Image 1 (cartoon, rainbow over the protein chains, first blue to last red):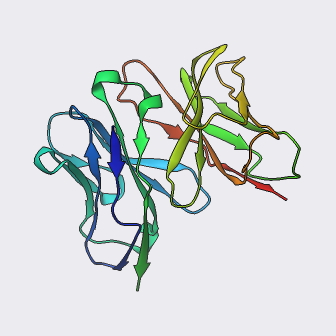
Image 2 (cartoon, one colour):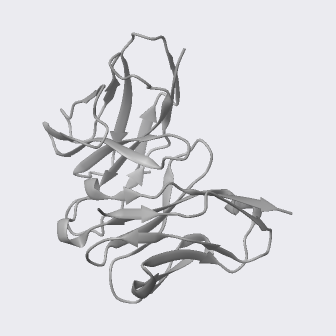
Length: 116
Length: 114
C-alpha cells in the first residue's frame, strides 16, 4: 500500500540551529511529494514540492528538501530556524501512475518547537 | 485576493444535530476537497469533487454529506450519524489540468460537539 511516514512526532530545536524533518514514502513508482506547514488553528500552506528533475528542491521561507530514491526519503531542511518556524509540518505523497489529488496521502505530521 | 474561505471558524453542536460547514473558493479551481484532522492522525479525506454536480467519497465519508451545485462552493454537512464529529475540518481546492497538483487550503473550521 502507498504510504507516507513521518517518524518524528515532535522535535525541539534551538533558535538559529539547523533543522531536518524526516519523511519516508512507500510507492511503486517515484511519487509526487510535498511538504506543507500548519500554524496552530490554521490551514496548510505549501512549502515545496517535488515532481521530477533536480532532487534538491527549494521552497519558501528558506526551506529545502532532498529526494533520495535509494532511501525512499524526502527530508525537509533549513540551515537556521527562526522562532516563527514553530508549527506542524506535513509530508504528503501522490502516485504519478494514478494522479489525482484525491490520492494524496498525508503523513501524521511533525510538531516543531523552537527554544531560545 | 484569491483564496478559500471557510465558515464558521468555530462551531458548537449538540448531539443529534446536523451542522453545515461552508467552503467557498474564488481561485476558479475545478476540484474541491474536505479533510478531517485529528491530533496525531494527519489529514483524512472525507469527500471530494472534480466537477459541478458530482462528488466522490473519500476514506471516511460515513456520517457526512456534501453538495457541489456551483463551482466555487462545496459545503459539508456533518450529520447526527457521525459518531465522533468533534474535529478540525479543512477544505481545499486544486486545479486538475496543467498544474503540479498543489492543494490550496482554507483556514479550517473547528467543530465541537457538546
